[in-house]
Length: 412
Image (cartoon, rainbow, N blue to C red; front, side):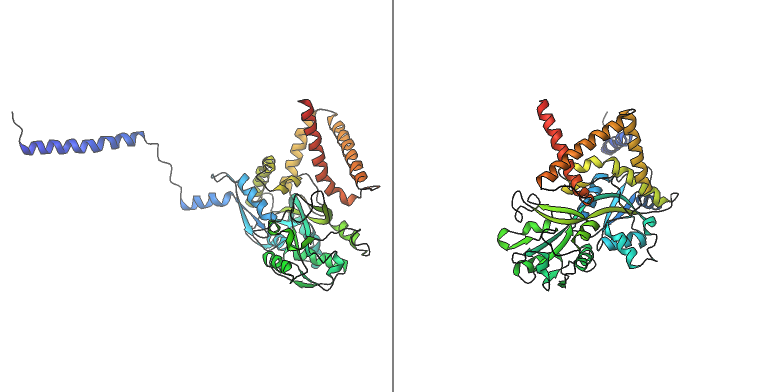
């Protein structure tokens, strides 16, 4: 029986349609269930619920690199995760005021001396600032670094000379103003950014420039030996006739710059004495039952729980100086940070068992005393002042690590 052309065409067309429809139905059957649609308002709520901000001084400062490291380690962009947003600010002193006054700033990296400076400037306005802005942890030491022409041998040689104090209202300018006023050293001050200032020092237009930041400062990687510059030392030996040097070292902490930090500027095996300001991560002390407090509490827990991840060699070398248990005189610890530390101490005590804590502390004291004796003997000192404890803490950690490494080698 023959089939008409019309019927044949209809049959072929139907077959063609089925060839399209059947795979489509199979694909639909195999595809996963569609995710529920999230509304604009819900997405907005989720984004804001997980975000916290950290204001830092500028893109080239150590604090910016720390904030970036924190972001890279802590960030989790899921709806119930954690997001850290670094914000570029002006300087440590302004960062402290931004945490205190700006609506959308949760945390900031500030310097230890900012608290007493604001209270001194306006005792009424900042009377209880330590209750409103509280510290989470000490981060690192910001070394006071004065790069000068080779014909300038000491701070005294800067009298009447052109010296760059970094940008106006920067943390460098704030601390340098305090220190040079204490030392009663008058200079012709300028306020160029660091890149411009470095060129002017090398060209001889400036006698020196000051940077307060965690060493090594990336800018100085550009400097070569033939540029004719060096770091000025700061200690009682190089400023023997200035009675206020002791006060500077009491207000701040003794520190040193090393060849490892600046191989083109400091000979191998040598160090340059200076002082440092502690950089501190602070937060606004929201009421404990508020959503902002809950967000910060979650951040603190995530940050502290992952603190070991910041010791990786890919992170900034200054992470080796962090001591989340360190107390900051004059500051109040943010409660979520204090609670986390208390929990960890309790866990450690349970793991060690009764009586182990006292024995461990005794062993640690013996080791530290041994280290202090060696440190003092190597430098011809009869004793180590209390103001040197911060510098010695970092060195003691290196000493313990070396001891552990040696023990591991012997075990092999």
